[in-house]
Length: 316
Ligand SMILES: Nc1ncnc2c1ncn2[C@@H]1O[C@H](COP(=O)(O)OP(=O)(O)O)[C@@H](O)[C@H]1O
Ligand SMILES: NC(=O)OP(=O)(O)O
Image (cartoon, rainbow, N blue to C red; front, side, top):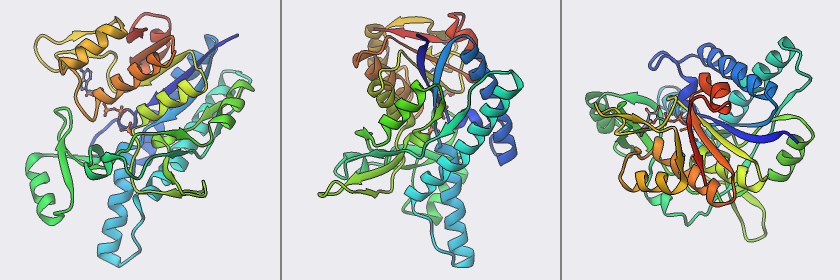
């Protein structure tokens, strides 16, 4: 039986030229990533693709706010902005994967599932926004923006600039997990849990209702990988490996590490909150829940990483 891998693509890894993001440019990045994922599939992996939406959900929200200010158009709730990103990014991934399958004669097709993820309305994250979304701003820009929008919370994001943050509750249950699992085991390349899933809460009668937040896609991907008993969780992001002392002169790439070592490095604050920390936490959770291996790498290294030549590999 082939190895079932959940590959989580970072929202930032789909943006090549920060400050000049366009839909076409993102599609090119998606096509590049698709080539490497199909390369993995040719090596015998069954792949479920999940993806982030941090930059994209922030752009949609900002566009809606500007349209409200300038033209009195209705505002789009954050939960709907997230749902929009599942459609738009899912469409790009599905098309890019299908085109690449056809080009390389791989008899497979991709399918995108609109995915809802249950969160608790009592999650403390609603009182403490922490998920960076949208553009990166300089300190001066951030101060001006903050003056014009006093309700915004902004934080510095891993040395890359200031970003707006929104509530990011923990994912509790993936509503569509059974259909995702069934389609994957029937041989489809499933795109799901986009943007961490559309956050919903359960009402008393067990019906669902959307709630404004952005779920961390690494946490949601880890939950999906555990739920469907995937063999491998791969987090594809902007760096080929995870580093100790990231960005410092004594930076050191992590290659093969045990779960215990990774926990130790996390306790020593090697991983920045809002960027690498959630990925490391997601990997820890997956391995503690029975996963056999997790890899953190960048899109262009995916084939080499599964062949053991690069990437950070974590084992229980
Ligand atoms: N210890 C670390 N090792 C590697 N990268 C790190 C580390 N700490 C922070 N980072 C930053 O985290 C980024 C990945 O987070 P982010 O861009 O938010 O993810 P995503 O690709 O899911 O959007 C890397 O590109 C890097 O800039
Ligand atoms: N939703 C989410 O975690 O997106 P990013 O991975 O793009 O930050």
